[in-house]
Length: 638
Image (cartoon, rainbow, N blue to C red; front, side, top):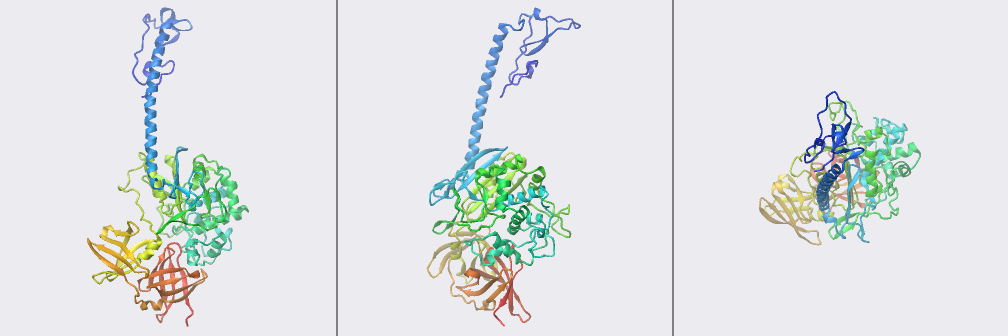
């Protein structure tokens, strides 16, 4: 317990700690009430007594007896203070160590020289309370990650792009409600106004650039520039939906916002952000790069898991705005601090970037009671509730880079995670850290597992190996297929479909349905053997080969899409129907029901074939989550 002496003139009752009985002057006589005597203090007690009548007082100070007693009391109090503060200090250090240990345990699997890893920072009340790095930035040369390792931070770039637009709006160089055609007049006329705010909040209705690029035949290893993206966006004559109608994450909007910054300021986006964001904040190792071949000293490489071990996952895109930002942990701590310290940006700017903009759209079923679109996304960041607290953040992924910045403004708390492993789950981990530090400030989790885990990410080659049709002993056929790296199963005769969650690279299960699949072996001809279990019973099944797929012949042929300037060949090969894209990218497509198929890749999800009045196939339409109404027409037939 901390003891503090009262101020001069206070009674001893003002002390905290053991009560000290006030000592009365022995020679003090009750004065006449009308007599006015001078004030003096005895052991901190204010009283009125004639100094000449008190043996404890001497002219100009205390008596030697009183001084000696006061010294003893002060020494005793000081000893108690030092003892109590020592205990409190030890408890505080112990508590800090315990918290740090808990955080460190979350990254234990990355804490070795043979693994990619993570750079971690926790900021509380404008102080970095935890900062540590785990694993390797470069496995080939055994370079460890540090707070000064430069990461490609993927979509964390969006909050910097949105902040740039907010700064320009505050300077009256543009308005958030301006039509994007005012700055990019070459965009097609979609018949409705698309504002800069629509681009910022992912409510523009534009098709996403990555869906379009993949559908057009671009490969992950291709060098993709802002010009490549813009050329493809300009080919799209339709929107996914009317602007402001709903939220749909769209990278295209942020690529266009970077172009708006360039056309308003007359400077390259990388230059303007350096002068107006990174420079003023002394973020000396942060920059936007439109050249994937740029040499980046102390840069982190990214990695993915394969059947034979880890491989480097190279990100060659050179577009900026939606991504393209490189930064260190130390620099991003300065960025997060700016939200509190406001070194750059006015109060108006911070009100914008920390909130959810008001978007109005008449006749929209997605409106709230105030007539505004229901949103949980603002200026390049999600704005959501986490266990009763306001959380503003964004997680990101490019190649093997996995990053996250999350802020709890009301608790003055933030977490920054920069990883270079495809398997790392930054948002989930960040919330586990928040649970540790804010345990007493957050509401109880809704369930025991407050943060749901994701499925094990296994090599794509294994997913392809196990896919196929298997003859079960009871003459049923089990079909195993992959959609967006999610493994699924279906008993064809029962039209019963179920998810299969990987437990390891070789074992999968659907626990609620009591179903399990275990890969046993395979051979060079592509034949695989599995063990299928259901309701406690197991059976060995072999993949069927040389299937009769002649019933799919009417869907085959060549098809062309003007919006992508791409030709597809639909064929049956290797016991699958496949779509052969430009440059020979092959995507397995599987029949779901009459004329409806789905692809094995996230960017080719729903495929619906179209027929004419004579029941002949005339084309098909692709509808993905972020790119809809992509129409192909059959060519090369009369």
